[in-house]
Length: 51
Image: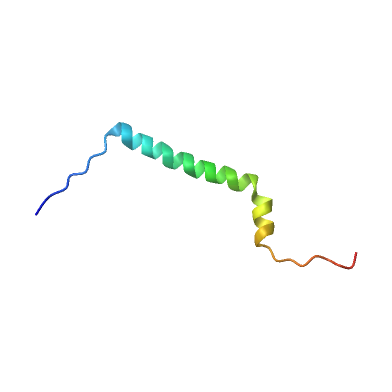
């Protein structure tokens, strides 16, 4: 049976962590910028036609 030893050095680990954090922060910023458009896309309110 073969043993597989996996190793991530600290530099690569911190780079992957920064990539993950930047992705999450970028996604949050995107949602905040386009929240009204996203919300109106998923809402199914009927427009008032009596005006």
